[in-house]
Length: 106
Image (cartoon, rainbow, N blue to C red):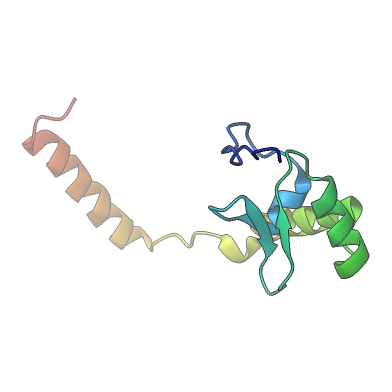
């Protein structure tokens, strides 16, 4: 009877698109949030890709589209900084100048 070596920890960075969906556990298993299926890590994300496609109907193209949509949300103008009115801005600028001069900042 052969002795099995314990699974080693992964040291390579996880660069595959599948890692957006999986959480790596301490016992070398992976799990998607909300999915009960546990997948063992064997050094390749191929079983995770197969699971995503077969069970959840998620392909690389869908994952990349999701990423683009998230990036587009960051570009939308709902994150615009609203400027202060001029009197408030003058007061803030004066306070910053006083701080710099008063504390001898470079």
